[in-house]
Figure 1 (cartoon, one colour):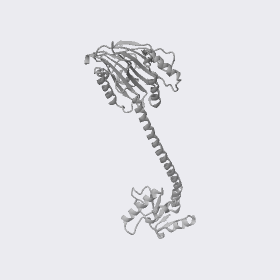
Figure 2 (spheres, rainbow, N blue to C red):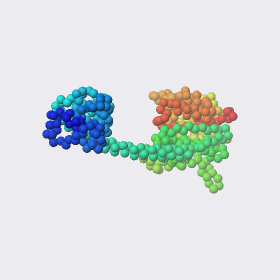
Figure 3 (cartoon, helix red, strand yellow):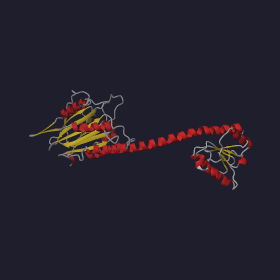
Figure 4 (cartoon, rainbow, N blue to C red):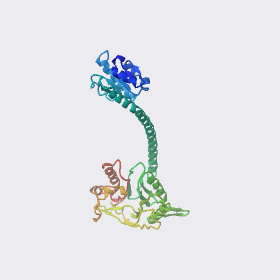
Length: 395
């Protein structure tokens, strides 16, 4: 397309265009040249003059409008103008100013370059349109997945205790912070009869949907009481973990989907706690004066070997004392480990202060500490904790 009066086109250029047998579309004004129907059928635009009879301001405005139209059509215009620097930043992407004395060969080279890249830009536009459609579809799928994960998260929380019991002098409190919508941690506190309460903290390796589904299996497999026609019997913690271990091992789960857990029973008449653990962090006993100590028991990962043993440990929870069971996602705010692993277990200052509070205040303090840490919005692992307290001296 040649834009402008025919008289403005230098003779050498006019003759060269004729010799090359090009299909030339002549448009007298820039206003007419902005017609999308015309621009869509050309490969390059040659503007004879950037001047206008109505003055410089009008010429600049017309030039900017033409530049906008060229950008829309992915075209480049070559302007024959004595002043090769008169373009502004708004038209610089669409218009190239050259001297009217430019050689025919150089002008033809510029036009050929514009003509060569026009179809490439058109294909790029098509690919961008395809990518935009794909992006829109992916966004829709992400929204659907997000909604499903939110629903799964609500359902998973519905399986957790709605209210933690208080039986005699025993208080319970809990912290639950999933790393993603669906957690690989699960906890439970339930009354087994009038004087016994069972408690569980389990951690499926990893987090997310796969680990979350495994927590439902754990919840189903942990049975703390067997009911018969003529009564019931409480299942010892070691046997509870034995059954869970066999159930997991028999599933022959892929991708190293193993589980750690700690299950126990507290007799609220005597305040005796019996618990067993498998691959789980050691429970922490907190004395009435705030002294912390791990209670070590043996027991490997659940779901690895059918014949793994999970012997029980016992302790009496004296007035003012606590037992804390937690998943490994909370280790770094509880334990102050020696990098070499040679020093005895130490506890962080923050943890030692928080465990001096009553159970609910201790749990809320731990939760607040987690929430205010750097990276709390994207924790590396699920974080769960149960606090068991003999609150006889607090009433």
